[in-house]
Image (cartoon, rainbow, N blue to C red; front, side):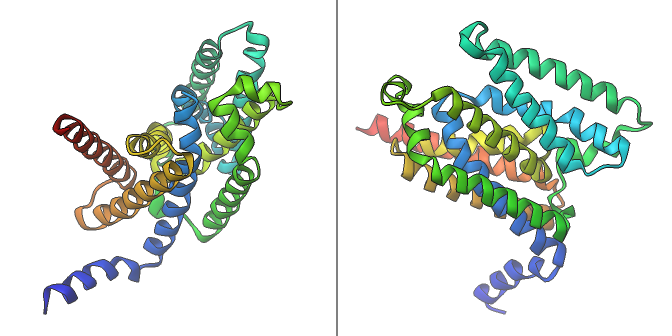
Length: 279
């Protein structure tokens, strides 16, 4: 067997299983959505709220699990509630946004822990905490696809407004845009993105999928469209490579995806540093 045919066999073997096909499609959808929205998160300095939202959906997930309801619906409800709660607490700048995030983050996370403690074993929540992309069902894939399409369509429609309020909110206000309204919309989109991302890498690691590909792209360009394209490319690379690493090396898929994201960031940072020193 030649090297090329052997490599092709290694690449196609995992795709012979339906769970790998479904998992790969879900990972690509989630990765692309996280990457596009992650660019706005990085540009606006909202990394903390991305991490906070990933933890504040925990009570929604736990409550849905205990009541036998749809986990995704519970997570969406908790995420949107948190997004509006942060916006309400920090309205009119009476409370700094990072302070509002801290209040919502700790309160909602504590509630999630209390709800989880009523279950005999935390193993019941392991797929929530650490993700289970290979356990995504066709029905869940459809839900992920619909939510991803809705998020990306909204970003496309509001692209100019989001770009302007990200770079120059003062000018945006001067020409009649409402930065606060757009911030609410972005927070809701972020909450929805966190919810679908949890299925891939879990509550604990989702902030990395949101932030790291966009941060990597920001090292290479300051043009928004190029940044988004590069962020999606890095995310797709990590999602695909992470699933293959999970299959061949028996690694947790979520952790493998995030480690590849982090590796891409470190390599890019090193190359940029060496390039700057060589000038």
